[in-house]
Image (cartoon, rainbow, N blue to C red; front, side, top):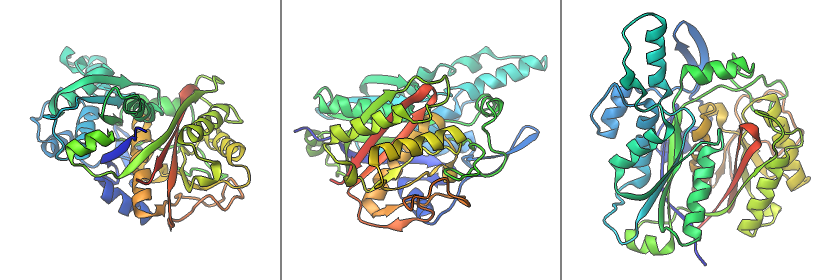
Length: 391
């Protein structure tokens, strides 16, 4: 039997830096979402409170006006996940990263200058491509034999974790760094506002009066290793990836079906792969964006899979904002920490719960947790569920 062990965690969001710091913030019910000024407009967003220059210094790389914020956020989280693990080892490593924004923050500078008749710099497009951001991170970190970029909207990083787990389970690789990164940019902010699902106030996932989401930025990575790799690296098992599945209900370009068919199938398949029964899941870190469509369909999907015994669940997006492609790995890190620390997180900003179920947690609770499910559902119904279990 080949185990997929999580041996490293790294994360940066509006809440701060490091997995342990994030756990303490989430357990305390702190939000990183704040009133953020973008050009001449104010909106609520989960902004990481470091400039690109400061991120460069934290990453210990030379500052450049041509390095995207997406890449810098990713590099910072990836370095934490790797820790002291080196690549001068027997087993070659792979790197899989999810992103949707890529270098859009730099491309916007070009178009802004162009629209104002100012001099333009085509070099700002060097990191526009999603893969360029992955390659930038990989080149600095070490020698990866396999590098891949995944872009499936909000399930991107979760799918990166799934592919990494599959590579280890199949014996193709023994060590894979997986996760995702996205930065705030005008393109995504205006895009979600055009869909009329950007909340002008603090978002309220799973509240009956929810109005939409708040965007956030950040990155997170997990180091996955086989048992053989752990013997060689000396790293400690923090948790195991025991279940994973991706399904698609193909209902709409952006929304999911009212019944959450894709979500249902993803959760059921993940349980089957993990060889677990629904009652064995102790906590669900839900996708929970705060939009009318997502939350109602996700509730329907959970009820279809778990019946009247839906496990304790919550959305942590009220603390970080919706970090798009990075959300799946950020919440995967949160899920692993909940296993380690024995704590299920509270769902912020609830005033009128959208469900009568007492499983919707309004405050963090301490409990024995053996298995956590983490859901990430993207545009077009691209639905991914992951299961993390104690070592």
